[in-house]
Image (tube, rainbow, N blue to C red; front, top):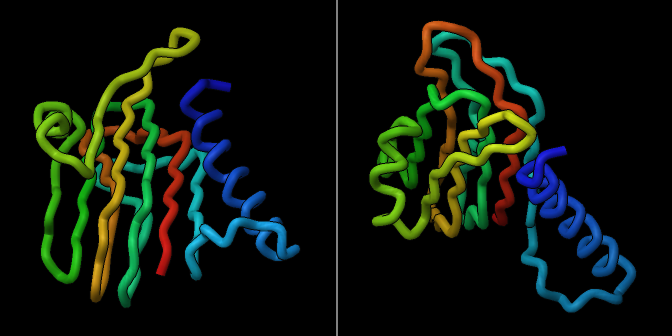
Amino acid sequence: MSRLLEWAMMIVANEEGARELNRLGLGLGIEAKGTNIIEFKDVQLSPSGSLSIVNLLGSGLVHECLVLSKSPDIQLSISVDGSLIFDKTFNESLEVSQELIFLSAFTKEENGQIYYVMHVKGIEFKKSINISVKNTSESTITIPHVVCKYSQ
């Protein structure tokens, strides 16, 4: 398993462990009410196809969202409270990610496979949020892992 997948799985495992400790009354009470984790594995996106990662109404916080793709031909779109705040391809994101506090984009090679990673963190919303990833290529691509942690 790649280190990036291990990292994503560790996020999920830590959240589940914290929930169980809090359920037993042994937790530190740090977990926010309504904390949720959405996870997708091995998503196949056809040409121009998209995956809606989160589409929420109400207020809350996206703690982090990790998209791990085998192809750079992806476009991440983020709408907050009805306004499109981010809509860029992986390559465009590489150019601006050092200037944005809520986004990291980078490549990672493990076991001969290159992964294209987009990581979003700390996005607050008052009315709604929508995060989606789109295939920008003319062929089907695989997104091995998507993990998103949010509270509402």
